[in-house]
Image 1 (tube, rainbow, N blue to C red):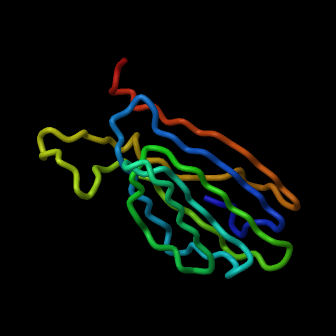
Image 2: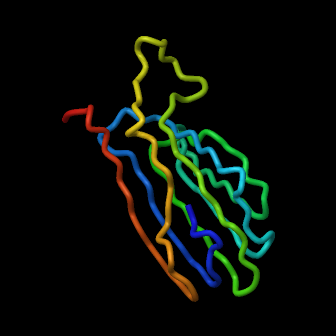
Length: 144
């Protein structure tokens, strides 16, 4: 989640991962208010999918569509220029099974509300901010 309204001249790079877990995919659902300046500000979510292919989704303006990310980790990059700032973005990342998973109902992993993460960036920072962060979420029900 960005600050609302977000600040100018941002360059935010974050890595999110669900470690020590059975998470095979993440459902990314955007808040309906998500809106950033078209063409000049962008949010990019990138990851390596289950087949080993690099995937990247880029968002700008108010065209934020939810999707299933076929991985248990992803990189987020948010950049803004020095002009107009809008509301920003907010989304949740919820562990889920792959759409074509071979798991039957009783064999699949069970996820709890503690697995759901609302993605937030640092708030109350402005002007020429350059952030790089790494987040890991561990499933406490999985033991090594």
